[in-house]
Amino acid sequence: MDQISKNIAANLKRIRHANGMSLDALSEQTGVSKSMLAQIEKGGANPSIGVLGKITSGLRIELNDLLEQPPQDYCMVHIPSSVPTKGRAGQYRVWTCFPYEDNRRVELYKVQLEPHGQYDAGRHGEKTREYLSVTEGVLELTVLDGKYQLSKDDVFRFESGQDHIYRNPSNEPCTFMCFCESYDR
Image (cartoon, rainbow, N blue to C red; front, side, top):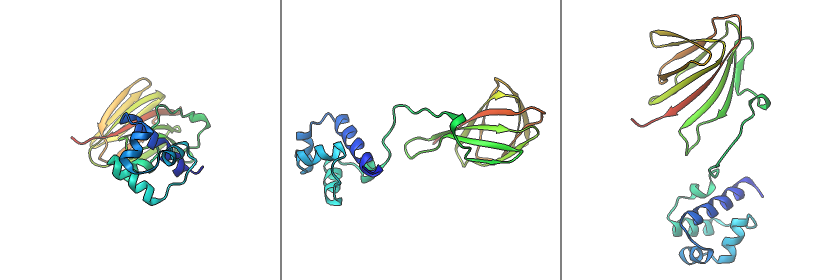
């Protein structure tokens, strides 16, 4: 079964259950046979665009609601087994633990700065806020006209829609977690 079929199967079942519908009720509302709906939910059918159109129309949802990655109740990332998503030798490494997704407006990174390493983070866009938690070493954050020094167990928050720079001023590695959120107000 391909990923799109898996997404459709999981999302259709989730949406049907969230609406408290049986397969019979879904069939009546969409005009798609109960057996076809059951096969779709099991991942055993590859529905045509016409069938997907009937389902989305009957449920009053967007096609993307069926196609997108279903929400996960849990997800574990084992960072030591992960490959950094970006880095510069002798300067820094960044692991993207949880990226921004369509239905989630947060992201989580682990950043490691080598001794005297620097990472120019740039901007994260308007209406974004960043939270830093230093887990090892010393971090120097430059944002706007200010410089802030954080040590292990320090937590810091700032508006990240502006250029900012992470720097390790020490002879020891610095590691910190970076949580970014996008907001409307």
